[in-house]
Length: 289
Image (cartoon, rainbow, N blue to C red; front, side, top):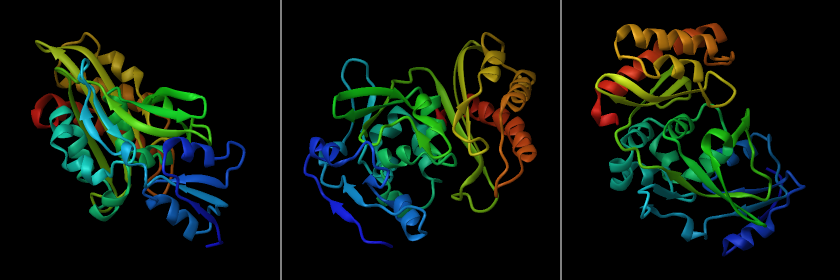
């Protein structure tokens, strides 16, 4: 690796001030699990890394008063999110998902904010968070803004964040009666990068779908909602034929890509099958609510 400056700010404001909106070689570093691999491979050669490790105020997990939303600080390690009773009670699908996300060594170091800011389309959490209607708070020199996770990713390894903006927290709204599930298909070990990830969140009343969110990742350049499949479900009576119809609509809409995990045609077939399976899992398994 080439030499670089390591800055260790003591406050969020100081950290933002050390970032350069015009210099791509200046980056923040949280857990660093992905960034260090990029540096070792020579893909990224930083001039300055701004460490966020001293920002302890960004590592809390709590439910907010009033709306009952779950707030997770951006510097919270994924392993702490996985073990949190608060997270498990609020959205058990997050806990379930983290148990097969990479391995425990990575989860002990990787952080929520870094995971999202990296924007790797193969990551497991983004489709889940989009299905749950989550958003992130983003700090910038001019103040703070809120971005739905659904709108965070601009493309392959790209986000809508400016170079001098930082994710400070993840907000997951109260889920009420909604039930959710996440399924992924891997070509090797269960914790490996998926060929496809599918997250669904559905609310039904007496067998009729009131609303549904269906999100896929890994098979596409970024995590995306499949609105055509959601429309198939809206207001319909739940049965096996409806789930198959939703799977067909999802496969028709998904713009799958070919990579080392499989061809675009193969992934389209996975979408057809796994959307149906994920919906069935959400409807039939309360533990994955």
